[in-house]
Picture 1: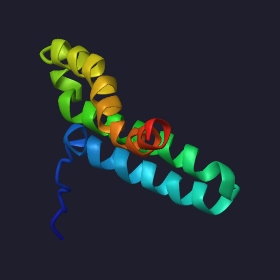
Picture 2: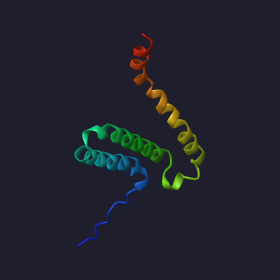
Picture 3: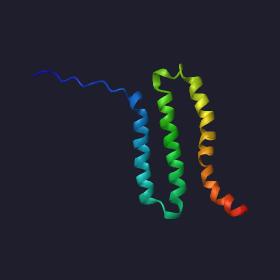
Picture 4: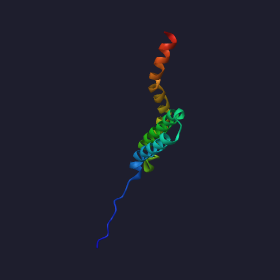
Length: 100
């Protein structure tokens, strides 16, 4: 009988997807176990952490870390500002209410 050779798996390339799947599993647990009043804040933080980790995994994988270090630092500095700007739409109802 011939020996079966398993294919090599590049976990560095799979890391972003594995991070998202792991965060999704934790999100299901949070949905099941955390009281309703706390769920939204925890899910928001969890999704942001997963999204950030996954994006960083895309930018920096194991062997490419030295080569992409500057890009990784630039992304780490830029992402919070981008996230804050994307949340400005939540302020619009408050501004309309306040100044109307």
